[in-house]
Length: 277
DNA sequence: CACGAGACCTGTTCGC
DNA sequence: TGCGAACAGGTCTCGT
Image (tube, chains in turn cyan, purple, green):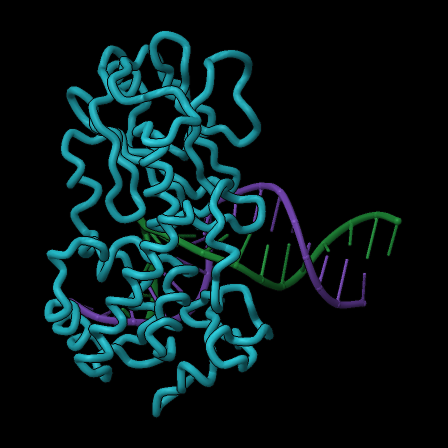
């Protein structure tokens, strides 16, 4: 469930632009611990130990749904899967339940990757592009122009929902923000991408940027017991609101399955395209 | 090449 | 009440 706004929020916190946690940037790594082998996306484990110890964390940033630690020599990349989280704590006592991977930092801290459902992964890479090269454009980056977006969407025949969730098409959207963006743009999730007008494409890009920005402002979405601290869940207009009135027109929100994903939309605000289902 | 289905996971919820 | 089945979802792999 961590999508772009949740990963951005975690990156900001780790960069110590809040003040709940001790600073991580600038610290030296003095150890590394693995508690679930399959969390490693790159092998072997021995290379992690020999390579990481002694390096400093120079920078922390986000690309798509990935969080990147830029070290003095190489990079550690995290993908949080659907239940992953990163936190900083004093390095004392045994790891908690579901902790999968630890970076021990001088003098007495640890950066903890916790991931109950084990979908998260961590990479060690000389160049981040080894991991990130297939990602589509950053939706919030203004170098993605409405004209570009329309051109790209116009040559795809896929339905909008599976297309927007495809990280190769655009990076950072997951199930929650895709449903929210399609509602804000008044587009049905099953609409074939190439059939929308240039103006509709521009509205859609605007909508994507609006919901992502609001998500970041509200520190992400906290659903179920996964991911804490956000409050965007209190401002969702369609996601997980099946049967509740649409905030725009009061029509009950409907839920369908698209590309095996639960998909929420307003049948009145987001009229069905000509060739549905 | 483009796309869809199945697998990977486990805590929670639902149904009998 | 209790237990198992269904569900949720991001991405990789495989098949068409």
